[in-house]
Image (cartoon, rainbow, N blue to C red; front, side, top):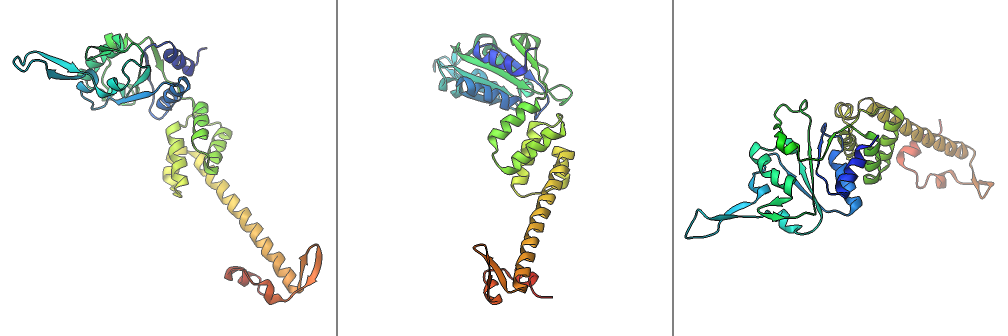
Length: 282
């Protein structure tokens, strides 16, 4: 069975149009960006929610001041920037565009043309959400939809997302959370929520309600592990201090492998007030 990532690679390599629709937060964008980087293609992202048709199809400008009815279109800056070069045009929030913007997109998808200018090396990738996730999505006109050769109904790929996040975040916190998620077998978590949880905890914020919202039971396991580690560290500290107290009680300390008689006052130099309190004689 052909995997989602393989379809993306094929579309980018062979310059085929691609549309991906799936739930938000499931690493659609990061996967496309990562694979584009594999090929060395720069990515130009257009957030289509609220964007005007002119930002896609070009801005009209009078061509003859004596005849205002004559005009031509100026190509958008993003198109001029990559003129004649291979790049990925990433149409994000695709089905949140207005219907007028959808019509302006048609020439980009069908002909690799905007404002009368052609770039055959432009790779077009459109990414949007599912109908059942947002009731206010714009229906994609069938003639436009049919211009996309590859059409993926995106499935959450948590394993790939965790690999991506492990490269992006190197902290012990990130490693521990990713490890617990793998061990839990919970593949319903989204990449976005995992990343948000990592950032929140790295910031030193332990919000139980938000943590459970992001990671479910995995958050509780992580906090339990943290508390266990803290208890272990505290137990080791108390054991160390108990050893000091025992040595002080005998006025001896181990030095270079042998017992040496010492002055109790000298031993307490460098200890904190808390440590001095703990090692006081009963």
